[in-house]
Length: 277
Image (cartoon, rainbow, N blue to C red; front, side, top):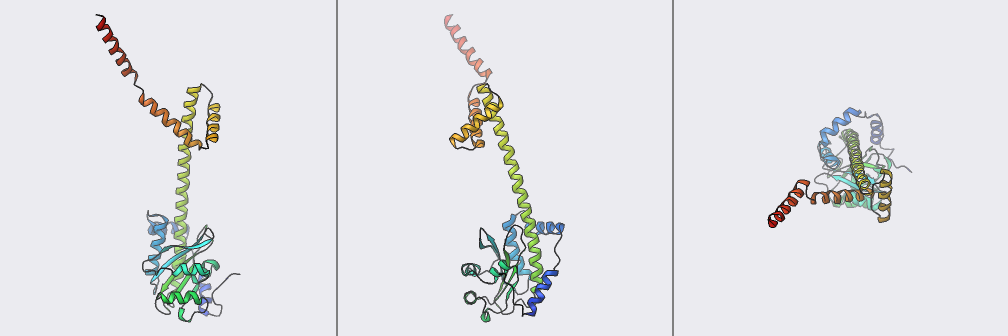
């Protein structure tokens, strides 16, 4: 069953209406936002930067974290400075709480006063013991992630009453920035896979050439031999070929050049000739 904010709360109805009409950034705007936020620091740096920026962008916010479900479990992937330890983890352990519900249900969760909160009594008691009075958790639309949420914390009651629209706007832009960063990271990973494949193909071709010269066989026979040895020895074909190429190259560098060899033979012949004289 999907969980949602309290339908009796007009502010929550307005929140859902506002979120439905919230304009999304276009692809170029997403790319520009990613470049501005992430720079060259990668996804981890972007996520931490987003939590710090959220505290500055949303009036009343004193700390922020980002929750994501990975491998079937929720975890906090980034947190701002000043975030009390255990705030999110306690929710994950209990299986409920504002950030858990926001991530699971894709619905905004607002607890304006945890001292009067009855939806998560165990969590509310723990958060209050850490000095947290107000929580606002907003779902993030992150590609490839089943559940994600941006969580805002404050030590004063009703801290987000005048800034929830700003929080929703920030969450929408944060989703676009994260998705742009994920796209770039996937492209980099794909490029890395291509480079690895090309390098592997190169070293395999070199190994085939070496076997062809040593065994005076065809390229197909050399490749079949390498594959059979790879399987029998339980070694990746790329690694086997790399080892063969390295040993062959090292062996060639240890052998004297023709000029040096001729010089040594010439020197020995000269000594023998001198002794005969």
